[in-house]
Image 1: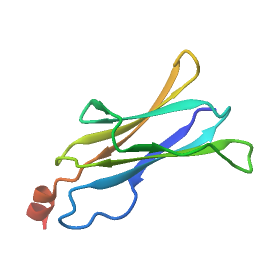
Image 2 (image 1 turned 90 degrees about the vertical axis):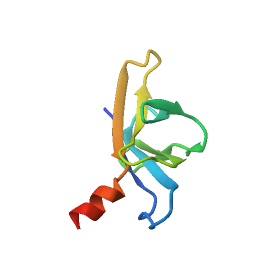
Image 3 (image 1 turned 135 degrees about the horizontal axis):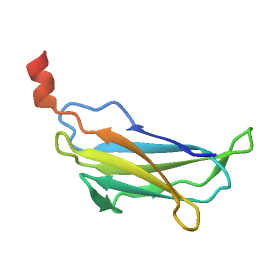
Image 4 (image 1 turned 180 degrees about the vertical axis):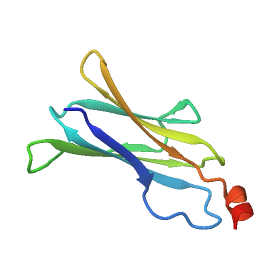
Length: 108
């Protein structure tokens, strides 16, 4: 099947904390073979990235987690890119957009 990919903060953001830890959760993996990469504002990132092992699920699929620590600017788009197959034929991407706290304050 096609993997299901989602990106979310590892913990709720703290005011004044510039660094954000993001988690990329990849589910519905079979066979357990894929590549996970990250981009921030369109540029590939390898620093601060960790990749966990494949974890078996009761339905005979696998899951995998990757994490990244980033210091995004407001509006930056962070993408978790999951590529399957030897020929990189299938790619699934999940996005997270850095909040614009100035805009949030204006809306309040």
